[in-house]
Image 1 (cartoon, helix red, strand yellow):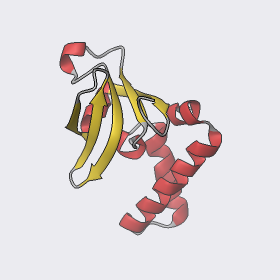
Image 2 (cartoon, helix red, strand yellow):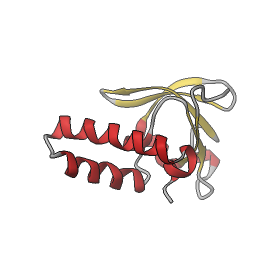
Image 3 (cartoon, helix red, strand yellow):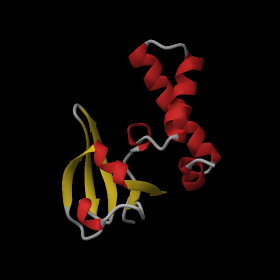
Image 4 (tube, one colour):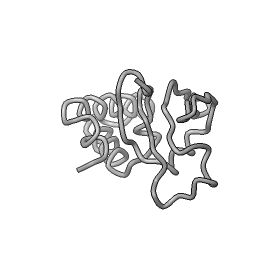
Length: 117
């Protein structure tokens, strides 16, 4: 079971996968079936570029040292594409812009409308 499926359930996971597939198809000119396959593969792999969205909380992976990360948990408030970045709030309420790649240190745990609700 993918992290996304476990966190949000089948309906929301499918909606996110299809939304990403439409985005990939539009950007890369791929056929819809190929774009859907690519979207599903990226989500299954836990690719933050495919997963990250406002309303999510990401927790530090157990194999990552706290000293190597900006926080123990991040709530995504917004996402930009140029460059790929996040406006994120840590568990102490500090808000900062971080490169999207920082999520490689974390795993998705929750996805709600308000990340710290």
